[in-house]
Picture 1: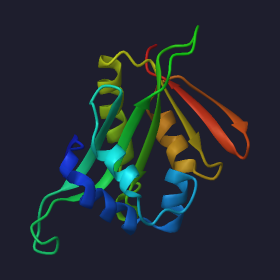
Picture 2 (picture 1 turned 90 degrees about the horizontal axis):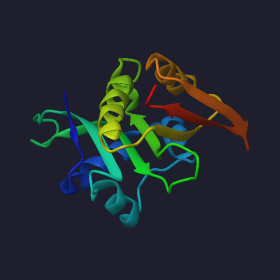
Picture 3 (picture 1 turned 90 degrees about the vertical axis):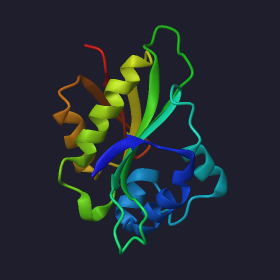
Length: 165
C-alpha cells in the first residue's frame, strides 16, 4: 500500500471507493448514505490546490482483479476554513476507510500525514462533525495524542483537533 496525494486522474478510483462503502461507513463520512458522488463533488475532491484543499489517499498496487488499475482504499482530506478573528487557522477534515481495511491503523496513518502537511501550510486546527456512534474515529483522534475538544450540537459531535501544542 502507498500513501500519496490525490491527483486529478483519481476520479474513477474515488468513485469506486464510495460505491464500495457500506451504508454505515458512507453515513459516518458524509452524514448521509452516498453511493455516488456528483460530478461537482468528484471534481472538488480531485482538483486540489494542495494548500487550502489537500487530500491523501491509500492506494493498493494494480492487480489482475483491478484490471491493472490502482485501487484507492482510503482518503483523508482537509479544506481550509475562512479565518475567524481570535481563532487559530483551521480546516475542516474528513477521513474514510473502506470497510475491509478498517481497524488496521490506516485512518491514523492518513491523519498523521494530513496533520504534518497541514502544519506546513499554517493550519493550526482541524474541525469536523462526527456521528455520535462513530467511536472508531473518536479513538483515532484520541490516538493522535493531540489536544482536542468536542461538543454535542444538533445530533452530532463538533470536534476540534489542535495541531499545534
